[in-house]
Image 1 (spheres, rainbow, N blue to C red):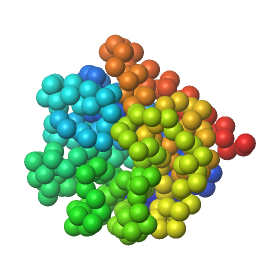
Image 2 (image 1 turned 180 degrees about the horizontal axis):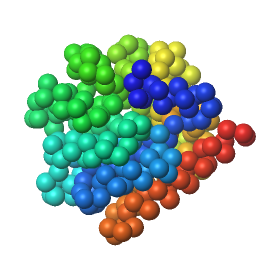
Image 3 (image 1 turned 180 degrees about the vertical axis):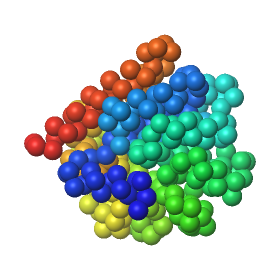
Image 4 (image 1 turned 60 degrees about the vertical axis):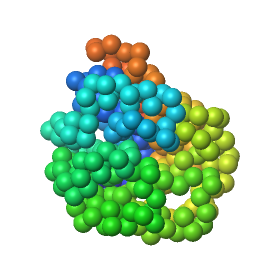
Amino acid sequence: MSRIATTFAALAAQRRAALIPYICAGDPLPEATVEVMLALATAGADIIELGVPFSDPMADGPVIQKASERALAKGIGMGQVLGFVRGFRERNQATPVVLMGYANPIERYGIARFIADAKAAGVDGVLVVDYPPEEAESFAAALKAHGMDPIFLLAPTSTDQRMKDVGRIASGYVYYVSLKGVTGAGHLDTDAVAAVLPRIREHVKIPLGVGFGIRDAATAKVVARSADAVVIGSALVQLLQGQTRDTLAPAAAAFIAEIRTALDEGITQ
């Protein structure tokens, strides 16, 4: 069983939702990325999504776009991203790490080389925003063969056929994009999210995470009532922008601890 599957199984036994924070690798300070990852795990993150910087992140809003630009300006590429994972694994062997990004950096690095090096670094899952399931079967199979989970997106506009396709080849969890827009955009309609998840579960038998538009503990708590996981990115990335070297990890930990507390309060309500 993969680290991701093990994590979700343990949480399900406790009737707890997974908390999955996203940060952009290398932003705002490359030398602090591993420290922030460790702080997130200690504060209650169940899985960490580590963004791979890319020059044209079409699914991301201004906050993550700018984070990606800053990381690229500091020379952060796939090699450095995998180095961050290795550094994290030296001190944390339990918390799953998912790389989230786009096809171009992976293909430029070389798909076979990426899969081998990601496995060696300690990556647990890969979410490639612009790899639709019908075009990614061989990639998904190669990840699974190396013990990593291929993770896919679904959206409010996804058809039943797309849900079936994702359900057939995805593993680990499926990421439901709760808004018709980019990351961090718009107002999240939690009732609409709760209404669509049962339809997705008709086709997807692995855990469902919900992201895009979750900015605080209150919203996360509501989403966790119907989802298996809550993904939070733009709000955390924005928070980290204003921190100093000394306050980065503590600020990340405090933010995630507040959300973790809210999610766990929901268990008894």
